[in-house]
Every structure is written in structure tokens, then in C-alpha cells.
Amino acid sequence: MRIRVINPNSSLPMTRAIEATAREICADGTVIEACCPPGSPLSIEGHSDGVLAAHHMLKLVEESGPADGFVVACFDDTGVDGLRERVSGPVLGIGEAAMHAATMLACRFSILTTLKRSIPIIEDNASRYGLGARCKGVHAANIPVLALENENDDHAFSVIREAAAAVLEKDGSDALVLGCGGMTHFARRLGDTLGIPVVDGVSTAVKFVEALVGLGLKTGKTGGYAFPLSKTPPQTGKEHV
Image (cartoon, rainbow, N blue to C red; front, side, top):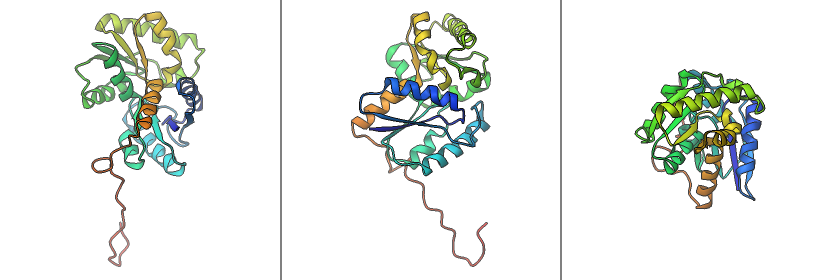
């Protein structure tokens, strides 16, 4: 089984951290191919970054070889719908995977992301997935995405840990979802510290995709995720504008 794990931003250190998590958690016989699109923003913090990253991610996938399944390692689930149109194997964003996993572990969960500007995007996604009622709140640690690149950065971990503790006290949730792929290397330490389930979307999405591929399930191609139509301009004798 070959799973392509795509970090939609162009941060190589973050891609390597995501790759390490994916390879640690995957089953024997699963090949993890981690990559990030050149030309994409270094981090995805807001709508415009997401649009640019989605464009470069789709271009990267079109130029790459086939895979059995795909993980999009941005918690905003950047470009997931577009990628589902382009490939036949299952595609999971780490946001959708983590939220669904949290509902299997707790009555209510909270999400901790990086910056406040990401909160509306994540809230909208939770509602679209039908999980808005189970999510007690989406909160920001007020730390930039690129500050999470180094897994040995005790300051970054301290910021995340303190913010997580405050979120859980405020919401009274039973589980915490990490709202950024760059937090993947903090998941176990946070779980040990907080004493509750801490859901990392990278590892969760990899295991879910493994399960879907193992079940022989693929993306449906008769409706909204059908392959894109060919865009052949009409033959009018004039240049198509």
C-alpha cells in the first residue's frame, strides 16, 4: 500500500516532522511518500494562503506517480475537495480525520490551533462535517505555524501546553484536537501531561486511509467528486479568451 502524505505548505522541516509521524504510525507494508509543493506558501495562515497552496498541491499531484491513498496534512483541509476530483484513491484531510476520531473518544472535544485567523475556517469545516455540536470550541494558541517546526523547541511546547490547559478548563471537554499539522510531534507529550485523549490529525488520517484502502474503498466518481471535465474551447475561428 502506497500513501502519499502531502504537506500543502512548502516548509521542509514541517514536512519531515509529518513524515516521521506517518512512518512511525503506519502498518508494516505501507509505504509513506511525504512531499510538499514547491512554490506554495511557507505556512498556511488564512484563506489566501490556502487558495495558493491548493493550486500548487494539485499541480504536484498531477506531476507525481500514482498512490493508493492520500493524506492532506493541513488542518484547514486545504484543497481536499479538489484533490478528491483528481484521484481515485481515498483522500483525507487531517482536520476531518481528527474531528471524527475525537467523536469516537469523547462526548465533546475542543480544538487548539495556531492563530485566530484560522478559527473561522476550522469552525466552518466542523459545521460542514456535521460535527459542530460535538465541538465545544476552536481556540488559538497565538503562535505562528513556523514556530512549530522544531520538535525540540521547549518554548513552543510550553505555549501549546499552557494554551491547551486553559482551553480544556474553559470548555470542559473530554478530548483535545491539535489544529495544525505542525503540532504532530507534540501530541504524545501533551497527552501524557493533560491526561486526556489528544488527537493528532496526521497519525489519525494515515490510519484511516490505510483502513479505507484495505477495505477496497475509493472516492466516488458519479457525483461531486467526478473527474474534472475536459475544457476544449469551441471551434469558432477566434482565439478563446
